[in-house]
Length: 524
Image (cartoon, rainbow, N blue to C red; front, side, top):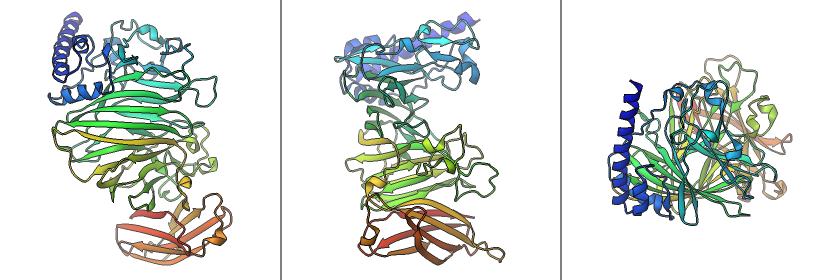
């Protein structure tokens, strides 16, 4: 029975590969590449140029979406978490190992949650070389069922290593695995939040669509270079795409991203440059929390710099119900999920090391036009779930059959706000305003710090203003906070039986020195 199933699977793969070869020919890909597509659909051996992935994506978008064949040999199909973790890459088989080049690359095995096949090719001197799976690339621990397959089943992702922390050791600096997810970090940090190639229908009642990176082409780095270039093919029922990542490890680790989308349908609920993180609770969100740790989160706030240059700080929340907030803007200068609190005492978690998690800053290249920085906050009762998403939502739909190009830079590292030159929100805290009383009046306390080198005596006296969409604000006070060398603003909010109130606090100085604008959504 198993032999006939395997024969049928091979027939399906052969038919699909033949159809994809026709797609590649129709898209104008070189005949040598199309002919090889019968063996591997996309990341094949042959001529490769900067436009090759766009040509493939353009041709693929003209065809109906074909779901991936995620079937695996029986020994891999039902791997448990522990069994999958017992499969490790053999570092001696790393791409570019022992070559003296500044990067090395390793691959992830398929199995467990990661069943989608990913193709990989190495590019050098304008030629792509398909990288075939081999079990010799991996060490199989005693928990792994045997025998493992020997045929080319592809991989589930890739990871790039480089000497980011010390010159004599190649640390993991970039991982692409699972749908279009990828993650990175800065020098001295540990992994936390992730980015995605594209977000479609996030938080939509119809259900979210998760595009996939189906193939990668990785350019062989130049000796002595600080960068490595990765090309990726994105595919989903709604859209195809060609991505180019130029990675430069450091503090921060920088990624220049160039993307070209080819929609199969009108893209009306699309998110560009999405980031995904975890927020469980913090000092301003501890109601019903029974945990020895003061705070638990990979990111504590959303930072934005609008097209007008206003800097907004929005503390994150773990809401009771799904929340979607849209910050309408024109030509945004930057946005990102930030881990601002870097004090171990704020977390007291020896294992998780939340104070070492990276922030992710998105800086658009060119004019992104009208749209909104969109924040999705999903309720969670555990820190194992990534419940925060942020992305740029263009105002106008991206029509089917069009070609849409956009570019941006990602910075994985520390909070970029201080480099922006404004006084920033250091902490947000809230609690009951008083004991007793018929109404649940809330007290908010916001601390501000100043960039290094700012002479407080020369910027004049501060003035605090707080506005609320509903309810009533009272007792707005601003005074020095000597413990941090900054300022503390406090105010009381009387909800007056409202269940959702948008708050906005501004800090101004006589000389016009810039300060972040604090925005917050209070819910009952």
